[in-house]
Amino acid sequence: MAVLDSYLQAQVAHGASHFILEGAKPVVFVFDGKERSMTADPVAGDSVMGLLLEIAPESVHASIRSREKFEFAHEVEGVRFLCQGRPAAEGVKAVFARADMAPTPEDEASVFDQVDEPAINRLFRIMVEKGASDLHLSISEPPMLRNGGDMVRIEGEEVLTDENLRRMLFEIAPARNKEEFLECGDTDFAYEIEGLARFRANFFRDRKGVGAVFRVIPSKILSVEDLGLPDEVRQLCFLTKGLVLVTGPTGSGKSTTLSALIDLVNRERNDHIITIEDPIEFVHPNKGCLINQREVKIHTKSFSSALRAALREDPDIILVGEMRDLETISIAIETAETGHLVFGTLHTSTAPSTVDRLIDVFPADRQDQIRVMLSESLKGVIAQTLCRKKGGGRAAAYEILIGTAPVSALIREGKTFQIPSIMQTGKKFGMCTLNDSLVKLVKNGKVEAKEAFIKAVDKSGLVGLMRNNGIDTSFVSDVGGGV
Image 1 (cartoon, rainbow, N blue to C red):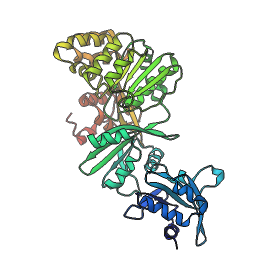
Image 2 (image 1 turned 30 degrees about the vertical axis):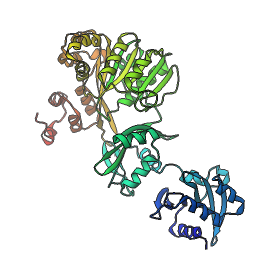
Image 3 (image 1 turned 90 degrees about the horizontal axis):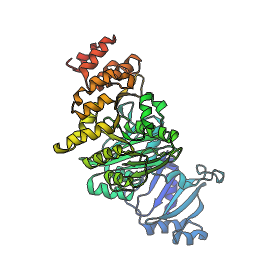
Image 4 (image 1 turned 45 degrees about the vertical axis):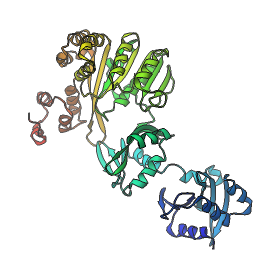
């Protein structure tokens, strides 16, 4: 009996759908889409060719030896198998499928189509099917999802080891990101499964080994109507110049809001939009606008260098994915002041703190000048956070600052601590404090009062506002609010 015949018999006995033989890798069986190594040691490339030549018809021997694509049928004890082979890094890769499980010619599919996609794609499909926002992969734990704000383990999944997780991750990482990960210990990039979704990926090392987190980026871009953004915020998209910022902590939905604003511009204007991102998340097709999306480290060296270059690329609107450093912030403010509409993000939790952050980045001797420039260029700040909804899912609470004349005067005079008062009296201009937004969510029955309290920045102010609106605040002592 040929050596491969014994493996094929084992494939039937174990109920595996596929048997994979590839040079420099262990023998693998596939069960319900999951690969499982059946040998401890890898098979040499030359050995793979020898094993295949032992059972293959002579008509395909030349293709096997020359590492070309090949296909043949083989029968063992009454069970018929379809084998397909392709070139691989070490010789060839062959996949055997039982004929009763293999696709028919009418399907225009192949045995490889069933097993050749990266193993991690199966987890992405589970993630999207369950409506999760993030997939977490960590050593000594099974894959976990963040669903409705909670971390949950995927049932039936095996505990990950450093070896199998590293292999799974490196299968989808671009070469540049593999090198960056090995050199720096972390890396970011975007990954896409056509027809499913895009995913923002972060690989990292911790004390146990390699780990990764993936954030799903839906294929459908939510509109400003879907998000329920007020008209005053939508009007920011029709400015010819100025700075508009979307802020909030990590995972607060900044990218979703920003993509909705860009989508509105794309639908309603006829301009040139340049986006600078790390990595590119939402992909915008050209509608009324021409859109060029550039990714840091792939299409450009840094945010600041891309922003500087954008001024020579005839833009009307520029999106800066992250305003991380003094140089990027400085160029963005100057660009907004000199005739361009600039959208950007910051990791600040409130609108007033956003203004302070922008100014405090600069040396003391430049801050007066920046206050004047910012007072003229800042047109709006949308600060947001996500709250757990009753019954599952999450709802966004917004704090909105519009750059009215009184707001500009406070920025110019260094009196940003008075901005919350202006926001309280500026509701007719579309302004809204975070507490107002949280109370609205509670009153509408979307969010529990306790959850709103946890997400509030000004907790004592929120409790007072809740009491004024007849909302029960007896939970405060339970969560240690101290108010």
